Image (cartoon, rainbow, N blue to C red; front, top):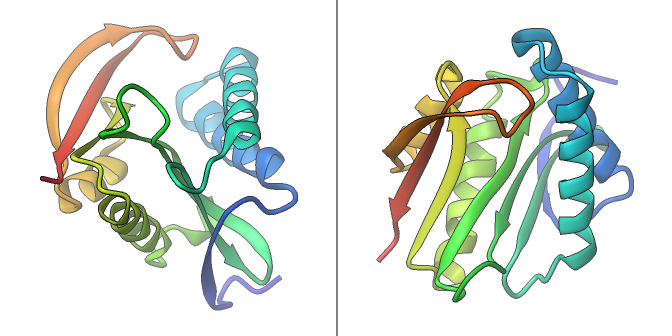
Length: 167
């Protein structure tokens, strides 16, 4: 597998996506943040549930592939609430693909999808310390809306909600 192969973006489910997206999250967050099986199980469960209800008219699963292997993901979950607000989720780029522009391309595709579908705004949750991700969010027009202490991932962190107005 070439670390220098061309990166392709695809929309929609691909075989192995549930396992691969879960693996990228579990590996990174275990190594960098000491998140454990609680985190991995939650990612696997919630992402699998999303994939099962994926509605291409309201939801986006975009994957970055290199040499046919999934090296990044981003989701727009548009099925919540009244359908005018989208939730950006499961945004990650594999270790060996960071710095390749894959994250920026995934983000651009997600924002294009939001505009195509007429969402008025999009939001995401992250936590303090994920500086590279926050830089991408801010470059894409997101601003910090709130910060609070939370433990939804099995460990107490300063959670952050970012929002972007699309109107």
